[in-house]
Length: 229
Image (cartoon, rainbow, N blue to C red; front, side, top):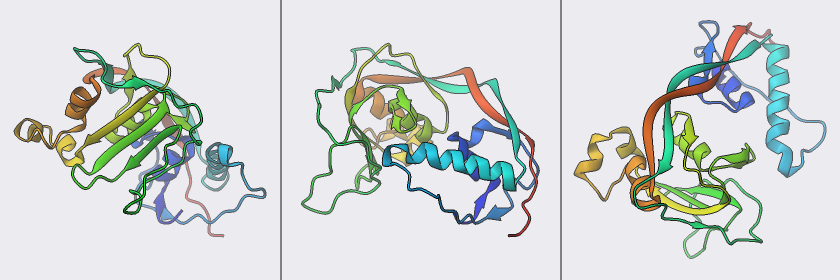
């Protein structure tokens, strides 16, 4: 990792969003660090995330003397429900798709993106954001197997709570515009350039509503600047 603040390191180590980190010294965002570390043994691909986060947590405790505790607070959240007319997606019938793989770019011209048991977030030339998913749940079981609400939480920078009542695995295909999502007023003026809120309703038959709800946060009790190596 290069030029990372302590807040960014905590976010990665504990797999939380920035709004879930509270307290800490005044240099938590201003001081930046490079980390160059190797594991003794190569992690199993299915366990790489849990291995990496565990090692990074240990590094923060050792080098930054980081101490924190978890707390639940009432914060703004989005609640996901089924819109009027019902869902516009189907249960997944995929039985032999490859394991989930992070894909951030569109495939080369003439090639089709691999279909995974999970989701591939692609860049779309027209609407700039695409979520292409086969065989994922609404909430996801672990960080290695994220669900739809995990992707929505990351995109909206708010916790998304699933109240759809839908269980099982589903196939999703969703296109939206990030700029329109940030500027909600633009959605009504340009229906062909939908925000994530509009796209969820029109394309998937799902609705997001803003409420307040319980959100787990990490409270920093102590941290020190590390000494030089």
